[in-house]
Image (cartoon, rainbow, N blue to C red; front, side, top):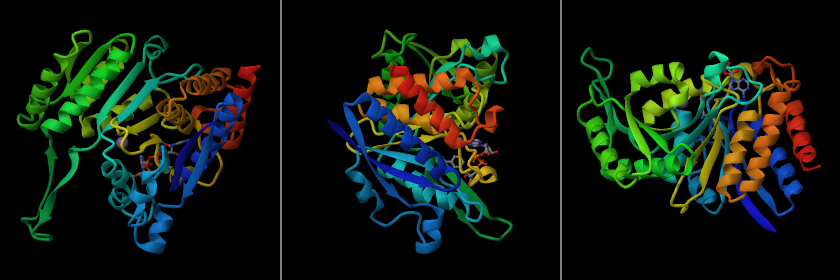
Length: 358
Ligand code: NAD
Ligand code: MN
């Protein structure tokens, strides 16, 4: 039997609640499949760990994670700690430390979920956003000087490298090619940012020459927001920089109905190091501990992890089970207008998994 070693980092807020639910669902899909299983190892890293140890994870944290086949992550962020400390100390430390340079976010309006768009438009949403995840605006390069003085400055320098842009452009082209429509939209802002963004365009233009079977169009990021709302059906695979894709994917999540559903993967396509899978939402302090967090984002994330681990059949079955529950509509959490608890949604999905096999 295939055994997948998965590091589970619940993190802060509702993170641990939804990944625990996710582990239950993953065990259920594995038991039902019969061909594989999970060896989960849990890590208590995050803001509570920080309060005890002065760091978000141990100094050798990355070494501890190295041997795993995947990382299943909840969220980070604490009301009493600065967001840049928690984000850089854990999530970005792992993404950047493991060179998970491709962030992938699928977006669809799941059956039974009413998004904010007119139903005929909402039904057209079927996108995958590819976010450059290692450099760009989040390279961490810059500084502050002359603190407290009137001449104080703060700078973040967006870093685009030939190697960095080329590898993410290839990844996006490969992904676009694997989808039925074979269409890629490259997002840019080279009208205003005439160094890094023009360089981004130049490199992307070179890479797409190797993909004559993929049709490509280009959009300025501001115009892209309009197109996502007004003409969602014209979009398939999207490539954007770290910052642009961060913003576009929150818009995508909103158009798809709830922050509680969205899923994402931070991939090291070289597979030298483990990739990390997480729901897109944050710690959701307002509902932490109430048992009502929507676990569907963590479940959709789990399907991406299954795919990455080669369990494509199980990934499809889990996605079907999620969609069975959303389309039935009787077991939805409060963010989707229902009254179900995290545990009830989890039980419903597990029920759909076992039922789907009958
Ligand atoms: P958030 O995603 O935590 O919450 C935004 C709103 O959506 C809240 O009202 C929340 O209750 C709701 N929501 C989110 N996920 C939900 C779910 N699964 N079920 C039901 N409702 C859900 O975003 P925020 O409030 O901007 O950020 C809170 C903290 O989380 C901050 O510290 C932020 O830095 C952090 N954060 C972390 C990540 C991450 O770890 N990847 C992502 C976003 C925000
Ligand atoms: Mn974001």
